[in-house]
Picture (cartoon, rainbow, N blue to C red):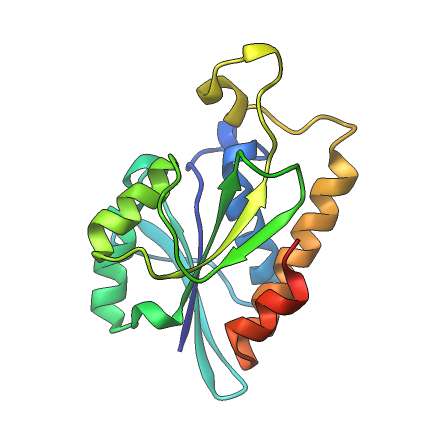
Amino acid sequence: MKLFIGLGNPGSRFDGTRHNIGFEVIDRLSDSLNIQMQQTKFKGIYGTANIGGEKIFLLKPLTYMNLSGECIGPFMDYFQIPVEDILVIYDDLDTQPGKLRLRTKGSAGGHNGIKSMIAHLGTQEFKRIRFGIGRPPNQQPVPDFVLNRFSKEEQPDVENGIERALKASEAFIDTSFDKVMNKFNG
């Protein structure tokens, strides 16, 4: 069993923003794996399928970023998904746009969605893909920056990053996360 979680904010006004890159990757994964995201439960939208004998879940919490754990914790409990089987994809200010950092554990690093997950799961030890969105220019406030879209100049790097995050997620379906990290980090 595997659960892929993309963090973001619900609503069309947030589509394409830096903070919603986790949603973007899950949408692409949904298309690639032909998993319909039409079911709702625990303040989230999800889809499921069996792929190669493995039950796969895709989840987008609709709680707004800062409350992501309110969806994820109950969802995992209901479907009896162990924390070892989850992979969360989210934006990372400390990494250049489009660059990926794959980890098996870590602190929230100031990310409120991850803080909420840690609080609800009771652990920092879950697999993650941190997707680089860069730092705000000219002392722009972080909340404004993360709710803006990527620049035209950043788009090629972001598109490449989305494709790599998609491939890393797909690889995790049938291989160890250590192998996935070795191939896709950086």
